[in-house]
Length: 339
Ligand SMILES: NC(=O)c1ccc[n+]([C@@H]2O[C@H](COP(=O)([O-])OP(=O)(O)OC[C@H]3O[C@@H](n4cnc5c(N)ncnc54)[C@H](OP(=O)(O)O)[C@@H]3O)[C@@H](O)[C@H]2O)c1
Image (tube, rainbow, N blue to C red; front, side, top):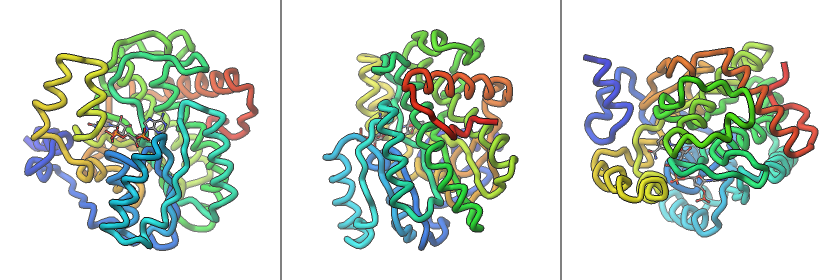
């Protein structure tokens, strides 16, 4: 019975969201004075729910990485009106398309020069359930943005996060995954670029990239957390079924007709952006575990069989290292994928 209650709480909004076996509320977010955060996609949807909460709990500086200037300006207006100008002024917006890997590297290097420390990294931005597309590097856009762009960002920020952790703080990273990771094909190997460029249809494309988000957290935990940096944690999260641009608008690109059911039909049962932010806020402010797949509100789940495979995680990260190095020709010295 509790399993059913957990499933309802993990995925839907309203009263059922309180049925979960383990509770966490945004109000329980600790005071974050003196801490510094980076949030990708922090201007809109779930990411906005996260940035708003971190600011409300006094984070001292928060970098938002996203694409659209208008969207982030709207977000800053809301922050100033509701939290005060002082809080809104703690945000620094950096335009950064995660598909542009050299730009991601440049942005990370700029943050490293600018920030004295980094306590929180939220790898949240993502391409939703949309048709397959290639980036200018010739890599599937779902994998390039949702997984590889975030690996580059994390890896180049890693020296700063290691320094912060060595000085006694707990540094927390979260990767936004989804329960849809279970829809990744059972023969997924992450063996070659040709394989990840295979068009699986909108659900499959998305699912494969969300599987990568969990595998990366588990890989990082083996290679970094349990390899000398016990204060440097990385977890993956599922936000639930959340009302956002992705689930209201982008879904029509993939399913012009059936999108109506997902966009409007289920709207009353979806979580709002703040409910969707709960597992991420828990993961980047409160948990002391690493390598978990955290579902709303704060329930660790094993994830699919593929998500639990160390061998698959190793293949994914080996391929990630190879593709990024080959496509950019850049010496990514610390991809957090080095043994
Ligand atoms: N909504 C759900 O039900 C649901 C369920 C499971 C998982 N998720 C995941 O949760 C995360 C947030 O989704 P959401 O529903 O909140 O979507 P959203 O409202 O559409 O917000 C997406 C955010 O990501 C940014 N972004 C998108 N592509 C980017 C790129 N190439 N480079 C940099 N930033 C980019 C957007 O910035 P701009 O506005 O500037 O483009 C925006 O700030 C995603 O990873 C999504 O897959 C969502």
